[in-house]
Every structure is written in structure tokens, then in C-alpha cells.
Length: 519
Image (tube, rainbow, N blue to C red; front, side):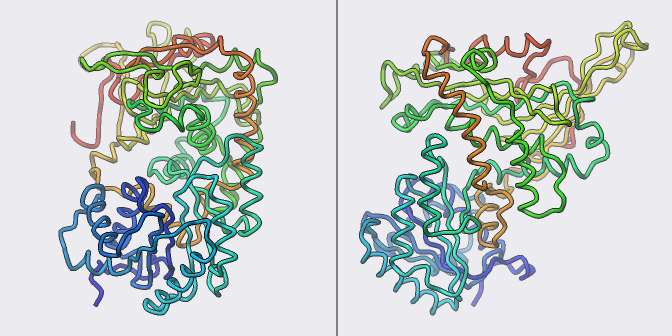
């Protein structure tokens, strides 16, 4: 008997066996199990599926399903309020302890998969999710092939998490390992930011509105600002982060991916490959920094020191666990980037990301060019530029800032922000990024996954910066925890006559807000 909510079967993913490597890890517990339960509850998974959890530690099926229950209870946007629904869901889950270096273990895994395919009437479709360190991707892929797991009549897809290498050279080596076993179209590289509602909504805002697309160019846009700020420090990731830093951890993937969504040309058709083609063109058009002097001029890096937020004392980065006390790893970077094509020639894109910032937010601010000076209202008024702000996280929505007459005055002008707050309207119970991406991978839709040429072009750009930083440690600046980073990041914009616009939770006092939430 089927207990999940019935919806149009045409939107259900095909039946498949999901092999979840790293099933006892934090990603599986916080994101993957809740995502699968949400998809099942909404009817996006049919009854013809099975999940095999794989990790080294021993676990019984009962223990594994108890872990599953705890994960969903704590982290899923749907609560387990129907025990029959959960029982119907959990019967599809099996656990197997596996040494990923043991080929015989993979042969045993294949036998388990075949038995589940027979039990749940699955026709050989297999999705392999590697929530593992990238250094293990190659050996796991080879053992999947040599263990017989790819010898079925259905499709085979490999989903891998970032980081995709440490630089271009290591990324190429990793890609060559994967290509020994999987074709490019079978490899799904996850960047979870591409699964976020408002990131995907950027295309609709741009290409479905005559209000914006005709103005989306150098003639009307003064600059674009992309902010991805975190209030947390490195937490328990000090060992990894100290070898990576903000540039590689956030810049090479999340930041550049959002930039491509803003700057890309309209795709020839709404097809995954056409959209990814346009994103690659943006990355190829990025102006590279030719030498260390250009990097110092256009890029600022910083590291947080001890600070205080709401009377809570916070340690400096070098005082964090597993961090080298003499570390010169950046926890913040800001850069001025140019896209050298006809649409964007001369328009600066300012990007910044950092840890221990005052607020947690991801936002894109598109600042339009100001009205001509000494004409009409601009003669007597200091007119603020119009803004389009796309809020990605944690609040989802958009707002447009325009100039309007101050109520009750004769001619005074005041900025008015007209806001659509998606989180206010729908609430926080919106699909998570991992739900969308797992669902897309199961349906073979690679639109919001990263193609190899995207990865390569992003690394080419980032490697120039990293190489310049290796030559000198003197340009590493410091900022107290809870601040907006080094002062030099402000100067990046001041040099061009701009400034960073306030982001979520830091709005200007003189703006009148008109929202869809009635606030």
C-alpha cells in the first residue's frame, strides 16, 4: 500500500537505486536524508526506489533506520507526524558497511543492489552519491566499475560534492580519474547554491520581465554587488579550511556561479546545456589579472581577529582549533571583477565573502545608473540610484528601490523600497536546495549542476589570484570578528565613486518600505 501524497505521476523521478557513500556523515544527516523524505512525502519519488547507505562503521538496518528517523525529526522541513508514512519510506533503506578499497566489498554491494532492484521492481537505474573527500572519488569510481555495479541496462549517474580540486591542475587530475569510468554527461557536480530558490529565480526575473532585460547592460547598470556573508567562524573545519581559505571555499564556486547567472546572455532555449553554455561564456569573458600588482589593486583579502558580538567574545581565526597559529589563510576576500563582453564592458562586479560577519546573508544588488545631474528633480535633490536587490538567503525575495515624493511634502523626494518577501508569504517551509538537486539528478536534468568546462574556467581565474597571494603575505589584512571586513574592501568601491549597499538586516533608515507581507 502506498502512503505518500499522490501527485501527477509525470513529475515523479524514475525508479532507481541510490547509493549513498558517507551515509553516517553530517551531510547525509542534515541534508540528504531530509531531502529524500520531503521528495517522498510530496510524491516525487515513486515506490520503485531503494537507498543503500554506505560507510565504514558497522551498523544494522534497524540502527540505520533509527538514524534516519532522528535526522528527519531534527532537520527536515516536514515533521514525522504520520508513522505509517515513515514506515513506508524507511522500508526502502538498507545499510552496508563497506571498505571502499576492498573490491570484494563492491561485488557484495552489487548483489545487494540486485536484490533490492528485484524487490522494488527497479530496472537497473543507479545513482551514486559520493559524500566523501574528493581524494576518494577516483578509487570509488574504479571499484564501482570493476565490482560490476555499472553493468546494468539502466542509466548510471555520479553525484559529487565540492571541492572539485584545489586548483586547476588537481581538478584536471580528478576529472581524468572520473572520466576513466563515467562520461561527462553522467557526472553531476553539486554546488548547492545553484539549488536555492532565488538563485534559480534570477533567470525568470531577467528573461521574463520587459521591465529589466532591456536595461540589463552597461548603458543602464552602474555596478553589481554580490555578498555572501557568514556569522560563524570555521567551527570544526579548521583543518580543512586552513588549507583552502575563502577564495577556494566560496569564491571559485558559489560566488562565480552567482555572477554567471547575473551576467549570462539569454540561452537559445530552456535546455540545461544551452543555459550552461551561456554561463561558460561569462567565465571565459572574465578579465584576468595579469600580474601581482593587478591582484593587489583589485582584490582584498583579510583574516578575522578576536572580536565581540552582542557581548559574546569571539576568538580570532588563528586561535581556532586545528588552525596554524601563524596562518596567513584568508577568511575574507573582496574583488572587483569585469566581464569583458559587449553587454558588460566597463561595468564593475564587486564580490565579497567572509566569515564572522555581522549578519548571515546572500544578496545580489544591481545598482542602476543615476539620472542626469542638473536636470529637473536632480537640480535640487540628491537622488538615490535605483536598485534591484535579490535576496537569496536566509530571507528569500526581491525588492526594488525607486524615488518617490515624500508624503505630505511639496517636492521632497525619498527612496521607496517595494518588496516581495517570498519567505514572508510562503514561510520557511520551501523546498531545500538539496531536494531540488537530488530530484533533478534523478530525472537527468543537469541544468543546475556544474559542467567540467565551468569548473576549469573558474579555476583559471582563481588560480591567478592564489598565485599572486603566494608571492607575498604582506597584503593580508585583519578585521575584528563581527565587522564587515578590512577597510580596504570599502576603498575598492570608493575608488570608483560607489559604496557597498546595506544588506539584509542593515537597511537604511530613510527608506520607506512597502512589502507584500503587510509590514
